Image (cartoon, helix red, strand yellow):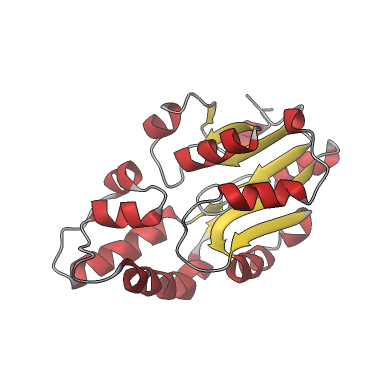
Amino acid sequence: MTLSGYDFVIWDWNGTLLDDAWVCLEIVNGMLSRRNLPTMDLKRYREIFDFPVADYYRRAGFDFSREPFERLADEFIGEYLARMGECALHDAVEETLARVERSGGRNVVLSASNHGTLETALRGAGIRERFLDIQGVEDHFAVSKIDMGHALLGRHAVDAGRAVLVGDTTHDHEVAVSLDVDSILVAGGHQSSDRLRSTGAPVAGSIAALFPA
């Protein structure tokens, strides 16, 4: 499946447009090391990462009876904000966004990132003007994007049959189902291809594959 035929494209940010899984892994491994806990490789990270993020922290080995999730999340986001400038967009992102526009479509972003951080990141990447609207969260605890997705669609006249959500996690597919729109999942982000395929949604190998030559 490609983006051809859709005129409202809902993009996830982290892992889908922004190549940041590697830096998230480095940060969480640093947190684990400081607590004398086993670290993991990217394959393991992609097998356990999930929403709500608290569940992923438990699978990574953190003990909430020793430290509350909120403290761990604050530690992670503090390091992430200091390093997110090291992350680049995935290949073909800018051209793909432009092709959606040229075909008469609208791009929006739906993200579990803090809304202010998301605005800053999109402007820093030079692509904020490509999006009609963006929707992030008001904190850093990344619970669910479903309610935010309904709020986003509610602000625009959207034909659900011509809308698609593009993400890199099984939760993105769950959000799409809740919004009654199609989903396309992209490999190379925060979850493994096998986990993405388990949803039954189409899985693209890269952003470039969304508009094949």
